[in-house]
Structure formats: structure tokens, C-alpha cells
Image (cartoon, rainbow, N blue to C red; front, side, top):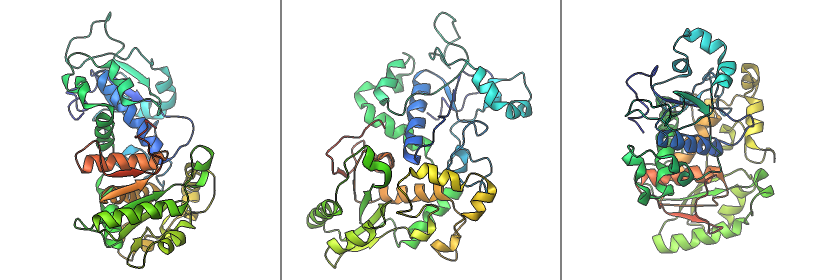
Length: 364
């Protein structure tokens, strides 16, 4: 992934420019869609381009990072930009007309190569602008694998391994996100030696598309894990404010249950049953809106760095992934993100993850 996304010359390299979706979705599904597209681009022999002139993340506050692109949260995906798709135009012209220029690019064919001279009968155009569905599996993308990309041709590794690698590559935190994660861990008194059960309970608008389990069901699993592993600490995350009273009450007194302070969130637990992406997007729709809905850093202590909802969601996901075991439901794309981060952290495609539905990881 690093090699194919750092070509010698972006103006001649085969590019796959990610075309964003028109609808708003949660941070987990946004990243899973990007990861699937990254796999498709890599398997097709193309450098992956995520350009902030056409792609923005609605969980990023315009006050903290005005361009609101992928790099407001993470390290760059590649060294190439949309301007490299139009080498004959000045970069400022490309930036000013990004949406129209993106629409002018072909969507395929996808197959290409950094390794062999282009042969028109075998390869598509140098630049394509497209995406793949969030709901496609990594194995579906790997059918595009050219023979020369032997690393991507190792099918015995399985789709589950590939998607964790793509997600880990996409979510390499930038310095600002690292600072927020370190500070959040400090606020919650967590460090590398901490042993705890990570619990994610998804409610909110998810009731329309997935089974919702009672809090008691999560408590049963936690008690069983505690008996087997002698762990009496829980890191809890939920969009249901009632859970923060229910779960501690259902566990023996020896348990310590921690969570991110509710005052730190732009959308506190229980604020509404509409998709969080829509609510947060409206709060961050403009600098004025973001100012009106800003959460002060003091919600995480007087020495906290500035942060926004995207950073807080990802910092929380990293800490959940660091738990000894994760208890959640994989019908949540955020839980899928935690699963993939845990897999990368523990260098396995099979992290300790207890899904109350008994499911294997979904594509999305």
C-alpha cells in the first residue's frame, strides 16, 4: 500500500480518484467505503487519491480544520492529488473547478499497472474517478488483482485480513489526532498496562436495521469474561444515555466503568434518534454553526488540546480497540471500525471480539 501510493511521478502514474457519496453516513461506514475503494484501487494497479477539494468529512469542524478533508484526521493516503489528474492545468484552476473536473473523468475500465508500459487493449485510462460500494467485500475487489501484484494475489490470507490492512493504512492518525488520543487515555486513566473490557452499545437510529439487545445481555457477557479473565474494568461507549446508568447498576460493585465525558461530545448520548452524521453535519455546517455548537476542551480537562467530534470518535475507537476484549454488535459500522483497529493492533485478523449477534464481520 505504501509503495503503490507513493509513485515516482504522480502526473504520469495511474490514478484512482475517490468519488464521495452524496449522502451522509457515520464515521465507521465512511471509512469502510474508503477502505474497500482503496483495496479496489490497489488491486487494479492504481494510486488512490482522496482530495479535500472534492471529499470532506462532516465530523471535522471547520473551525479546527477549514478544508475538512481526510488529512484533518489522518496521515495522507497518497502523495498524489486531483491536480495530478490534470497536469496541463494550473493547480489553482483545478481547485476552483474540482467538482466539474471530477465529473469529467471516466469511471473505468479499472485495470492498470505501475510496473509495465500501458497497453491500450489491456488497460483502462490513466485516471479514473469512481468508488466501490461500502457493502462489497474485500474478496470481491480482489478479483481485479493483476498478476504482477503478487502481494495482493495471496488469496489464502482471506478478505478479513485484507480489509484490516486497508483500514489500518487509512486510519494512521496525524499528530493532532494522536495528541487527542493520548489525552483521552490520560483523562480515563488508561495506559499500556490497563486491562479492561471494551463495550459498545449501539442504539439510536440503528433499531430500524438491526436487533437491539437489552443492557442486561451485555452485563451477562461482561460478568462471564470477568470470571474467566479476572478483569473488573469496563470502557463503555453508547449513543443511549440510559446505558450509562443501567450497565454499572447491573455489574457487581467491584467493577469500575468509565466513559468519555458526555459534555465533550458535539452530539451527546441520547440527543436524538436521527443519524449522528446528519446531526453533527448540521452542527458543523459552517464556521458560525460550529462556533455555536463548539465544545470547550475543558470537557476533557484544563490541559486538553482542541478537538472536534471526528477526533473524539476516533480516539475513543482506538481506546476501545486496545481493550483486552471487545463486546459489541457488528451490525454497527463503528464497531466494525473498532474490530479492524483491534485486529491491526494485535496483528491478527481474529481479535478478541464478542458479537452479541454471533456474526462474523460484515463488509459494511
